[in-house]
Amino acid sequence: QFLVELKAALGRCQQTLSQIRTLVDPATFYDVYRPLLNGFWPEGIDLQGVTLDDCVGHDDDGRDDVEDGGFWSRASISNGSLVASGEQAVTVRVKGPSAGQSAMFFMLDALLGVAHAGDMAAFQTEMRTLYLPTKHRQLVHDFVS
Image (tube, rainbow, N blue to C red; front, side, top):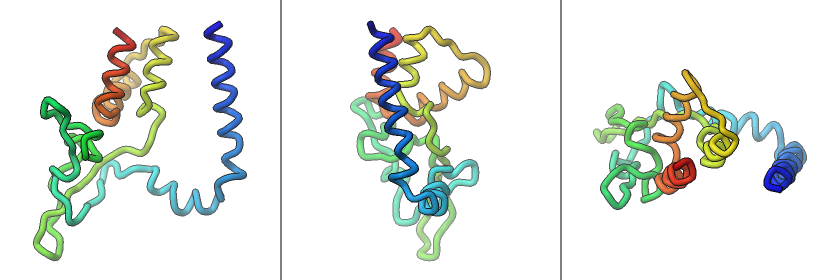
């Protein structure tokens, strides 16, 4: 029964995704959004007028957390160049979006018994530790345990 429901859910996802071409102007996507979706890796992008602490939130035990007011994990940001005002910019180095940044795919792998090795295992560890919000990481941990 579960696999039947999973198949139906994936069918609905496919139907929704097939509508993208009619809902999103291809030129706008290509020229405006796609460059942003590529991320800023490895060169990074300098943000002016913010500090490292502005960019990183902290969870209840003081660890970095993107859900608690920050945007990035501390591992992806650093002090950047000095800007004209004499302030130090913050350099952000983040990869573009990936399905690997979704807790759903970690849980599907676990449910289906998929175990990754080598480069894929390293990629999943990076996505889970640097890009998943704390509550999503906990969900995956609890689901797999």
